[in-house]
Length: 403
Length: 85
Image (cartoon, rainbow over all chains, first blue to last red; front, top):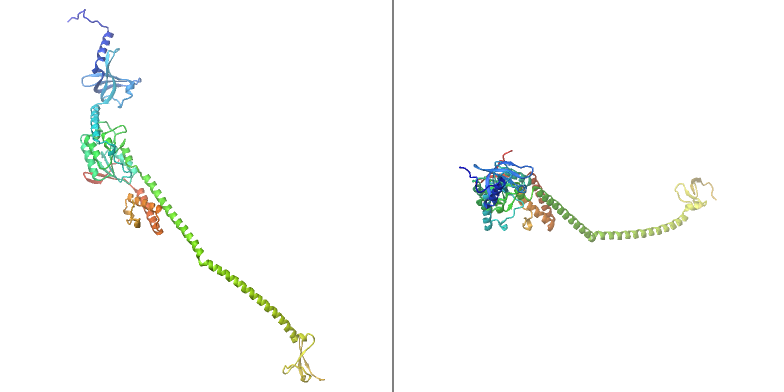
């Protein structure tokens, strides 16, 4: 068919492109749209804007994301990743291409999952399952700690290491359970119920990090209800700091990670117990020492009172009396002796003056008969041999003539 | 806590049969009794000796404690072997 030279419309490239742009940009559907596909040709030039192509089996769509929107990305983009991108269709006139100017990207499936999450959360919240006054206190020093997690993951190892370090006195009962996949929710519910029969002081419900699909079992209504129904308080530590699951809301305490859950379950550590024990030990010693000191004071007070009332004082005073008497007796005696001694002296002097020997020294002699020792005091008695005693001795003499 | 009657503040239970918590609770009771109550000296000495034994016991438990890990299989509890890395 021949095109007619006199067609009604003649346009320049620019005019046409502008027209197309107006068409596209005035279409409300194209200005607020979620597009699902796989990332390819991902490029992040120095400008900070992001360029990629979104593809599915039969078509592809050029996409770009401004730097300020890219800064708010929650996921690290990579080629091959299935995503849902939100934005509006624009036309890049110099190239004559249209493109999706993306402002939000989320992993594929998250959108619907998130809707489901919100619906369930609102429902359970309305039922009061997440009420603050349902929360039970976590015991400070648990004796028996239940753990529900995968029997093989790093989460279990992290938790056991933490418990071993902080409270090796505790007893751990592990109820292993798959933590993702379709089997996970019923298995988790069963584990919570069975573990409760063991009467643990606290239960750690945990799982390491993963995608939102990986963590989904912890948003399952059955699991959330089992957490709320658990007799033992539950600390929920699923995923990373930024992940929130409905189990976190239903649990008595939310921990950002499995390790943190183990830490929150052991608020009193073995070090605290050591400190407490030392404090008790010193209080014990101190109390007995002060008790003994008190008793000593008491006894010594009694001793002084006893001393005051004891016969010792009386004995001392008697001793004193005795001393006094003794002193007086002695002095009296001495006086007597002195008197006697003076008397004796006088008598002695008198005696001395009567001693015949005193006369001898004045030239008199005592003459006695030698044969019988009779004193000769008359001439008639003097005959034969005689003894003459003078002041310094005796000599013999013979009477040869009498007058 | 040791809210036992006044006559028997030291429990007759042999210390080795006490759990850490029980021993600790008794120790606390003894310390409080010694600090606040008037006991005959002989009783106090007995309390003190029991307290010292409790301190030694608790201390030994803390020193030697090893986390006991068991695994629930169905409704029965069995020892849990951690796989080594």
